Image (cartoon, rainbow over all chains, first blue to last red; front, side):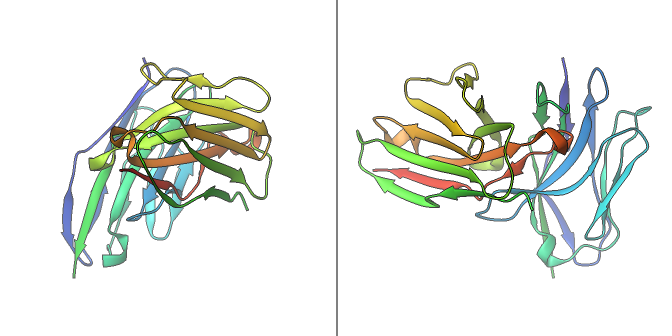
Length: 112
Length: 116
């Protein structure tokens, strides 16, 4: 069946380090892919998305490319900040919400 | 746009009482609404999915008589935890989706429930 697998955390980085959080998926059809972020004590909010193969989603310096050939949607940022400390969830969904899956979340800690 | 609110943001109740949590889409009509429970160590558990005017679809293992979901309109869904017990203490998050969002869910800020 369909699923999303993301790297386990926590990930601890120093400020200005390069970030990669891996996410791979299995799916039939052509789902949309998402990265959501959850700051402490809050709900989830969309960080970026891609709705078709080869699309690149980007926001706040974060990027992820929908790669169908490797079934991946890795999250990257060139220079992290302390304020990026949060939990990041990779997710996939079809357009009608008939199927949607979240990864288990990766906690990112950025130290000054 | 696409703002979802939850009320209350936190609640403390005595064991055996019922608690109602509201989820509202403030500036759009939600095709579908979702209820999640978030456990320590961040994992999200989908509890149920509901469409306006129809009964909620509960995930396996979720007691529908304990977690009552009412999707009264295109902008409001409620979750009632009946006869709450300490093991029901958790962070409950709702989200909403709309037909034009390509599968994106818009999340509420969550409700922290503590049952004494």
